[in-house]
Image (tube, rainbow, N blue to C red):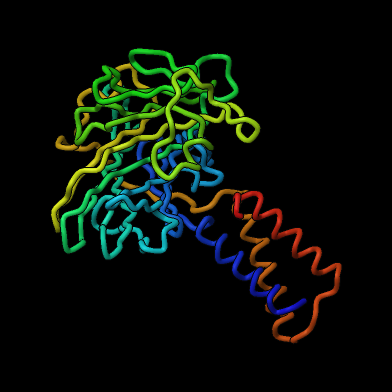
Length: 340
């Protein structure tokens, strides 16, 4: 096996490692996972505190399918993927946050647990996104948040509803719309997201559309009322919600704040929850960082690294069978985590 093959394998391990490292927090029946290396988060409902069993509110197998993107003077940066931004977690002393830092912008995605009106304990999170202009001059700054939903897929009922309408096809909700929140359900779980929660700046557009269609566009996808959630032949019945905050001028050192809420369904919606009111934030309890599937994958990675180390130390070549085995392991992990 040539050294280029070793380097390719090691590079793959570097790519996979961030996807498998995470920091976990819980409150009530909610678990929040922050993925440090890729700048993403996952959200779960805990179904068994003793066994630490949980279900995801949205796609979690590959957390990168949901993301923040910022627009800076007509340049678009997908946070967690752009080399212009350094990513780190803030875990001590304050609410946990993912921080994206560059010479142009400082973006802080801060999380806190919330309890809606009819919940007995924490049943969701507030996401507060702060963007500070660090550049030497005024700049136009906008924000986009794509959420890769899944609960309403593969059901005969509408994949989404709001407090005002059923959503069976591509739908745009603008600032003038009377809708306050949306809901996506399966047979066991429901996710509720804010539209107008009387907190912070209301999104200029909330677009319900096919995930692949929204993932592939740099900023806004062309909206076609009534278009279904399929993107033939690539993505069938694949749902997503995308929040858009149009660019606004920010002076040097100025900050803009956006606030979103995600929670288990409550018939009262997000009534009474705002960024300025006291939060219900019980003690944060760390949970195990990885689940069984990830533990198995980590074991495969450790085994692969050990094999590569052995051959590097001996300066020997791999047999065709050994090379095929390593390549098969790499291909399996690449497919599972949707790596290119």
